[in-house]
Image 1 (cartoon, rainbow, N blue to C red):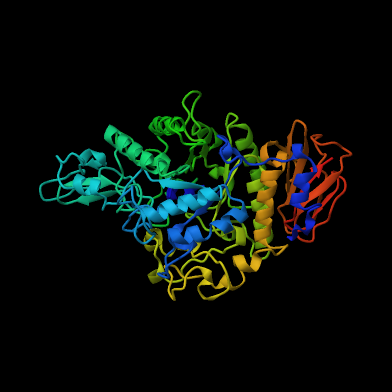
Image 2: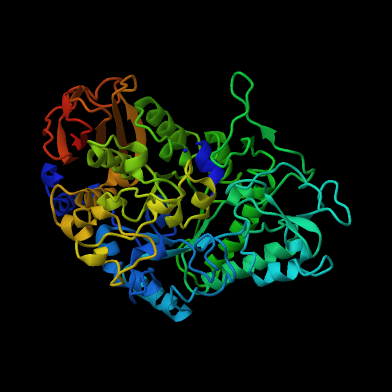
Length: 595
């Protein structure tokens, strides 16, 4: 949802030396079994982002729904996920497809009912899959009853639940100018004139998404009540949307314009002068709110709710120091898992940058757990951001291995596991996303990464029986789909399943330290996972289209004469014997256990 942040920072398992099951049985000290009631379940969790409109349509109306998600829980269990994050399924006018919420304590009828949600929860629990909800605290829909009351008059009790301000130069007959130059992340001014009460309201995002006033204690209590409602229905936590945007500069100062080296201003995709949004993003008061919400969430641990309820933050931030703050200071915790978007959205295969960002989040967040994420509903898919058009699937193996084989929790987006492609609209009249409507043609919006899940090669891609789905199904569905890839040794889906299984069953990959290897190499990224009393695991990834040979003893972190046993390798890759001579094909990956 944080569009400004995103724009700024834009198998053969034939290679396995032994089957995963056989490997797990060889030595109990080398394996880790997940405890579904563990308070620390989230530290090595695999979390699947699920866009409900696009996952599975159970009733043939062309839109995904909760019953459809329930139908596919066995697939998610086989894949190995610990939790699913469901993007907003609350009642909404759907101006921003659920992120404009009109009722926080119900289910939108197009997705089902609260009874459908309860059944989804019950069936997910049977499979030890947790449900995470989206918590949108920055704004509501302009059709929410609170905002309807707020805009009804200046003296309405809900008036100060939202951000209202007089215009500049306003007269009885003229609305004047907006209070300042702040911009919406969806284009143009962030201020909208309301003729009835003759003030402007602030919207960091779409015009139909007015911002809450977080200086009002009643807003704090309202969201605690919302959190309690869903906690009592059994949710395992929340992903907090656009959380760094809760507060604005109380002095209402203009944002600074961005200039190039010659002093010229930049224009963004909407034709506006590009601004530094430091007056409306990542203000320090956000930390106080999240400390309050975390303390409230933690009270549920003493009320008969098993396991830790986890808080995940959508945290697009400028540097690792700011990310570290999102975990909270000693004694005042905030997020268990703020998203590390600095690694996942480098958006180019640069070994040096990857190495630095991995090392940053492993060593500079005060011992907290990294939250690694490369993809979501607000960004073009992996093929568009990292692919070269020739080796896309191999490159996606590279990305997946970073995601699952570095220390921490892993989050990925539906369809990544089968290599779904970014498929943006080709005509403006087909655009559904308000970002694309305003930004066309420079910014075509986010429809291209939200297309229906591709389950099989039948008509409708197995997603829907409707002849017309809410977004068109990409032509790639005939070859890129779950049924085609399921059980196929060299498929991307099998690669994901195997990596996730290794993450859960191999002790080093489950909780070992993360140490970078061969740090001067600009073509191959390598690291080691290790811990006391367990065999170390090394990972090497070729970031180029040319074959590479690497010596992982460089730097002395691993034994100079160590042997290595293959756990996973790219299709057609070699099985090395010695740690000092590992051959990698174009964009090849090797994962091995050191003896």
